[in-house]
Image 1 (tube, rainbow, N blue to C red):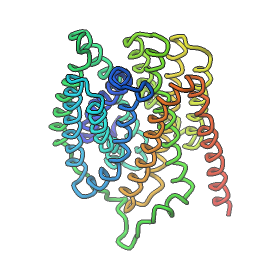
Image 2 (cartoon, one colour):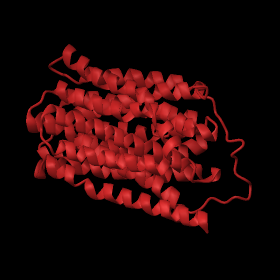
Image 3 (tube, rainbow, N blue to C red):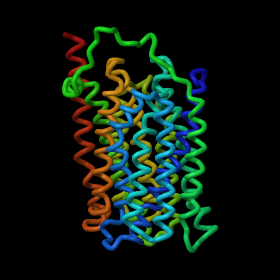
Image 4 (cartoon, helix red, strand yellow):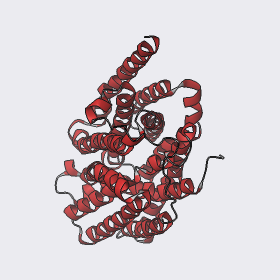
Length: 396
C-alpha cells in the first residue's frame, strides 16, 4: 500500500460521498417514480435521467478538468450535486415528478465529473501502479454502498410520512463537506510521461481504430451498460413486481454495490497474473452467470446472487477496461481519450436505464435478462479479435 498518497486519500473519501448519492437515487428513484408518475412505464425515468445527466456532462467535465485543473473541476461537481439534492427535497415536498426528474438529472451531471476520480488517481501514481490506484478509489465505494442505503433506512424510520426527504438533506451536507476536502487536492502534472512537443493527438476515429483502445472502451460500455440496465430494474421488479419490502430491495442493492467494489482488492493481482484480456473475459462470463441465476426464479436469494455476480462482472470489466485505456493513449490525448471513453460508457448506460423500465413493464424480468446476451457475446468476440490482432502484430 506504499503507493497511497494524499491525493488518493482525498479522492477515496470523495468517492464514498458520490457513490452514496448515486446508490440512494438508484434505491429510491424507481419507487419514487412509480409513486409520482402518471404512467407506470416511466417509473425508472428518474434513474435513467441521472445516467443521461452523467453521459451529457462527460465532455464538459473533461474540458473543465483540462482548463481549470482536477481540483476546481471536482469542486464544481460538489456544488452541482448539492444543488440537485436540494431540488429533490423540494420535489418530494410538492409531489412533482417532473421536478424530481430534474433533480436526478442535475445530480447525474455531477457524476460526469466524479467519474474522473479514477483518472486523477491514475495520474497520481507511477505507471506500474495504475490498476492499484484505480482499484483503491473503487474500494471507497464499498463505504458508499453502506452509507447510501443507510441514509434511506434512517430517513424512512425518522419520518415515515416523508420517507426520503431526510436522506437527501444528508446528501447535501456530505456533498458540501467533500467540496471542502477537495481543496486539499494537490495538482500533479505528468513528468516522465509528458508528451513530446511535436506529438499531435490522434483524431477520435484514429484512436478507436487502435484495437487496445477500442476494446478498453467497449469493456466499459458493456460492463456499465449491462450493469445499469439490470440494476435499475431490480428494485422495481422486487418491490412492485413481486412484493418485497423496500428494506429487502435496499439490502440486495447494497450487496450488489459491495460486490462491484470489493473485488478491487484482488483485481490488480488478477491482472498481473492473467493479463488484461483474460480478466475482461472473466468479467464477461461472470455477467453471463447473472443472466442464468436471474432466470432461475424470483426468490430473494435469486435476486441476491444475481446482483452479486453482476457486481463482480462489472468490476473485472471496468477496472480492466480503465487500466487498458490509460495504457492505450498518448499523454497529450488523455483528456480527449477520457472524454471519449466516459461519453461512450455513460451514453450506453443512459440508454440502458431508459430501456430498463419499459422492457420490465411490457415484457417482464426474464426478457430483460435475456436481452443482455448479444452485448456479452459482442464483448467476447471483440476480446478474441483484439488478442489475435495483438499477436499478429507481435510476430510480424
